[in-house]
Amino acid sequence: MRSLHHFSLQPQSRRVRIQLREKKLDFDPIAEKPWERREGLLALNPACETPILVEENGAVIAGAYAIGEYLEEAYVEGPLLGRSPAHRAEVRRLVAWFDGKFEREVTQNLLHEKMVKRLLGQGGPDSGAIRAGKANIRVHLDYISWLSDRRNWLAGDDFSLADIAAAAQISAIDYLGDVAWDQHREAAEWYARVKSRPSFRQILADTWPGTQPPPHYADLDF
Amino acid sequence: MRSLHHFSLQPQSRRVRIQLREKKLDFDPIAEKPWERREGLLALNPACETPILVEENGAVIAGAYAIGEYLEEAYVEGPLLGRSPAHRAEVRRLVAWFDGKFEREVTQNLLHEKMVKRLLGQGGPDSGAIRAGKANIRVHLDYISWLSDRRNWLAGDDFSLADIAAAAQISAIDYLGDVAWDQHREAAEWYARVKSRPSFRQILADTWPGTQPPPHYADLDF
Image (cartoon, rainbow over all chains, first blue to last red; front, top):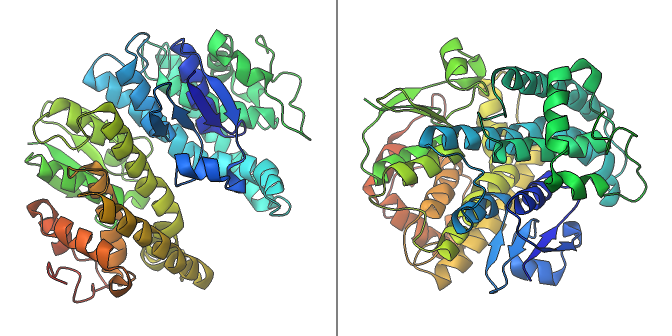
């Protein structure tokens, strides 16, 4: 059986879990704590980072970038990267936006400060970082609203890896209760459509020890 | 004529410049200062980040991830991503290593502190960050030596985007004089082979106002 080494807090792990389910590829999820630097994990990926996909034939694909592209090349059914070069460029621009810019400006400031630092025993959250993260997420939600107003999905007509990368990041922040959905109705409507996809069900069922999500977290009609 | 909006300090811009020259694709380089948030740049990429490729037909491809993949899809001569799915996974794993892990652990601590903060008027370098960057780069150079000892190029038999991404990051740090090459001879031999490629010539000719590179920077036989 194909397996995925993942860390459920991590947006890039969530992104691959959603992509695998969108493509109807079964996998055995293996929960990892990358900071413990388990030898078996290091042997699979010397960066000791999740996600890592291990195919039934033993092939190891490490990292969300490599896995994202590999799945589209190896399993062409249900394409998530776009049909034309221009559409693929737009999907990849937005994937990099959420995995890079959103990750640095929002996720590092909120998820890392509130949850990951505690797991790593690095002390309490920095209040300046939390403030920055909460200010920054508004700009990203405005951008999602702007895109949603003009397009069916974030990168164009079709649901794509861009929607998955965005929703994977936002779902982790939403678990913390840090998304002011009432001030971003168009982004909320887009997110409700992503949440209602069967590929998202497992993400909404995740729980993390010591932190409960807000009531709307798993509500498809929030 | 094809054009590339770039920022010469930025490893991801260097990576695209090298890739274009490896593929023998002519382009007009347009130097940008992304922090000035020029309207023309914002119109091309709402993230206001370089690199941005503009094709002769007007197609805009924004970001090193999208450009790197686009160039391989659109111009199949001189492939830089690997021939098999396993090789491509390895190339992309290493591209993410250098664009992600190296960037966070080394480039942000050295290039950002020493050069970018000054350009942005954000004050002097943080000495703790400089120390961390100098300690971290040793681990990365050891890893390059380890790979070079086992493989012809970083990702396998063929020169690839992994070598380009690694050399683009390292060249920016080398400009600052922060690479202790004498302690990493195998990595130095790999880098000398990359430097001697015609695609690298323009990178070695770059100069940045107020900072001179060390004498070995552009020396192919250092």
